[in-house]
Amino acid sequence: MTTSSDTAPAMNTDVSSRYRSLADGFGAVLDAAPADRWSSPSPCDGWTARDVVAHVIDTQRDFFTTHRIDLGPRPGLDDPAAAWRTHSDVVADRLADPAVGATPFDGHFGPTTVGETLMRFYGFDMVAHRWDVATAVGNDVRFTDDELSLMETAADGFGPALYGEGVCKSGVDVPADADRQTRLLAKLGRSA
Image (cartoon, rainbow, N blue to C red; front, side):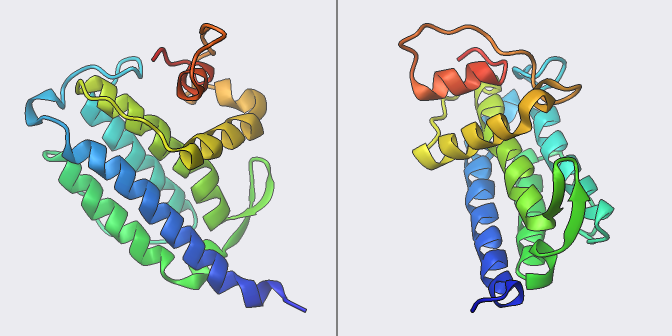
């Protein structure tokens, strides 16, 4: 019989690996951004591409701080891609500790763990905002089938909270024959 303590390190390693994969995807978009485009408006109302990166970093930092996990000083955003690499390396380092991802707490949707919430909500954020940054700087990004599944599952799981203050705008209409990514983006209030 397997107990939860027997599976916690494996689960946390999986969280660390999944986080790194999503963080690397977000970072690749930042690395490809032209240096003169960071002030370009993003699809997020009132935010530049740089503001989107700041949001992703700051919300993750706030989440870890809430759970008494120190990420050290916040990186400056003069070079958003470098700031992201610094931030995501620190997060991945913290997640290498099996106790971090397995830390339980009562979340918005009930009992959960730091790792589960990180992947469910902040993983969702890294994928959605990858598209926002790419769009702001004039690049294209395509999600993998796994990323689309993660996003669809998360969006469905959020229910009405998906359209709460500061999350996503109301969904937009798309043609019936729209591809999977276009349909997902439309559900998140974005026009592809």
